[in-house]
Image 1 (spheres, rainbow, N blue to C red):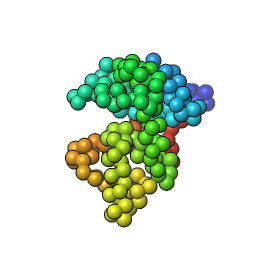
Image 2: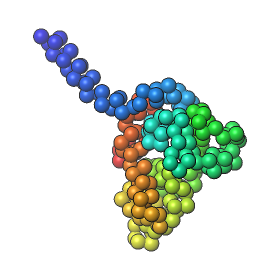
Image 3: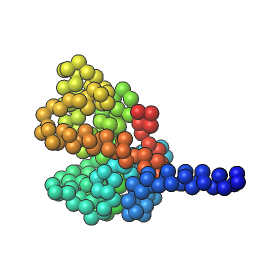
Length: 204
């Protein structure tokens, strides 16, 4: 009887785990090793692979041929102008290939790193939120939003509940999209990829 109860408990645990796994598109699994390798080449062994996987999930839902209405391409959704600029910060990204998964993963990791190095914040969690905001909408907007927060008595060094509330001039639609981008990646998608590698904002 005790054995039967233990089996039932295990089955319940397995069922409880299914929704999180189901959130990962089947196509994602084939890219796990490549994403991990490219992330670690840029960020080292502690690269936040779960975060980057969540970012790809948000950008393209792991559709290697994805093209957005505004022309962003591939798994990491690089605009043509940004893709053409990437070799300026990483020579290995010459000959831009946004539909090539390896190129896309390296470019995503490098572009995040480029932003991360240029953004100051009080905590790593806030710094990552600013970094994702910059990836989506541009570093210039992040800096202007930070300045607007300071002008209004909030902290420019904190994203959550501070700078995230300020819009320095984007359209309402673009502002909502940018803030939703950060929220979805960190608080919705990232947990589904927890087994892939380190996460960020674990205690936030």
